[in-house]
Amino acid sequence: MVDAAKKIVLAVDGMTCAGCAEAVKRVIRKADPAADISVALETGRVEALTVAIGEDLAAAVSKAGYDAKVAA
Image 1 (cartoon, rainbow, N blue to C red):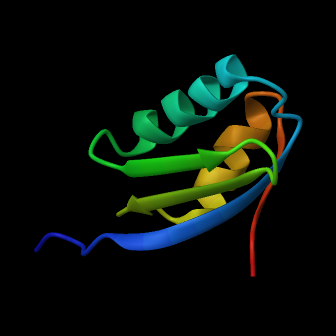
Image 2: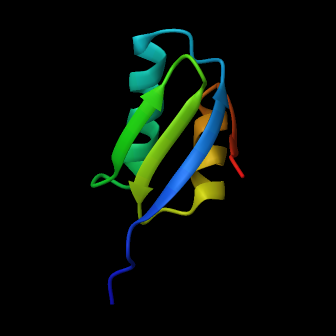
């Protein structure tokens, strides 16, 4: 049985440029290569339509050097 994709929203501090946004996308795609990801640098908001678990994504992004948490 395949899990259904769901929208995960992360609040990410420390993204300052397009390179940072791409780095965050790479981390998320490592967890779910099929994820559909959008990044808003101005607000630090990352939305991903993914089968991954939000807390796992936040932990992976934090490990990559950004302060990330699942947004409420």
